[in-house]
Image 1: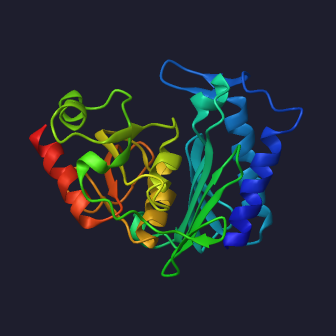
Image 2 (image 1 turned 45 degrees about the vertical axis):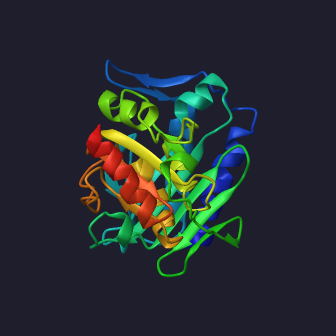
Length: 266
């Protein structure tokens, strides 16, 4: 299965380097959402690859209604064809393909993901995991960070319309987060916790949706990290890609608890 996910990622990456790729072309626009042509094209590539694989999938993706490739699919796959679309449209070279496969009868949670892949479109870096088999970055086993103090923490932090009180508590009250980063792709920001690139990732405000974090969260768990909501509870099952979540991911339990304490103070 991971080989199939890798093939799908490579097809999307090749497309973004082809002549027909146009980062400014709009596929559809409404008052609530704009779908870029590259999002639609990447999604089509993934769907066609899943259909041609001969394996049965129920496909959950952002740009179209859920459907199945066979009458009785064995698997469910949650697809984010390009996470970081605004980056791509603006010419910022940070974006990812995120794919998470679960048994068809399993609740859609990070713990139940059987295979996960997050691939960086412009660098080609691949993060992947198989349930119970650990997490890997370009074939090398991931190792989460052991940093436990906020003042030493390098954290990914989503600032886009998020809870102001929480952000102030994390950024201004001592001891505050040591170093803050934001790539513009939640899938990448999240999965960086798995490899110790970030010590933590924080996204508070019930805004992020499942396709952006499901694969990454599974890879973080397989690497030995901690994933929860802003109350420290396991993430509730994803019932649709309209469901909104808050996330706290950390490389170890102590840092996770320190972040939760600061969030609650905010």
